[in-house]
Length: 128
Figure 1 (cartoon, one colour):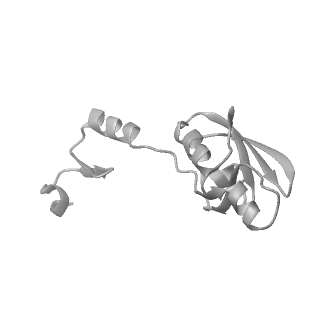
Figure 2 (figure 1 turned 90 degrees about the horizontal axis):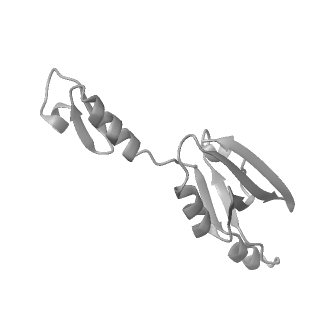
Figure 3 (figure 1 turned 135 degrees about the horizontal axis):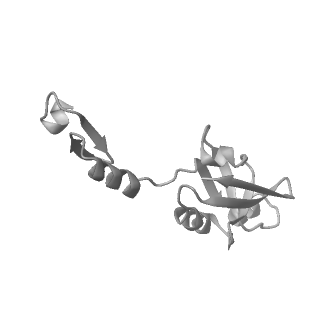
């Protein structure tokens, strides 16, 4: 931390690239709340494009390619191959719409995921 802050012998913390020297609780609180984007741990693609490429009838939604261990996506029960079709009250037609819907969520929200797994409708509800 000496190389980052030039300080020695006092507490130093770096939050989202911002150096906080000492116990400035208000600044720490502001930095933590402003920079805390939720990470869902999902790699996604446009389901309609991918299913069409596979020679199948297009299915609209966001196709889950990977789910990171310990992520919100894993806690929601999502698995590779699932197609997310709705988040909360927002319909999802493609990956961009899923990203937009997820970007509006905050910690503490209760969110419902509607998705397809092997052609069957599934539902998951979690607290973020």
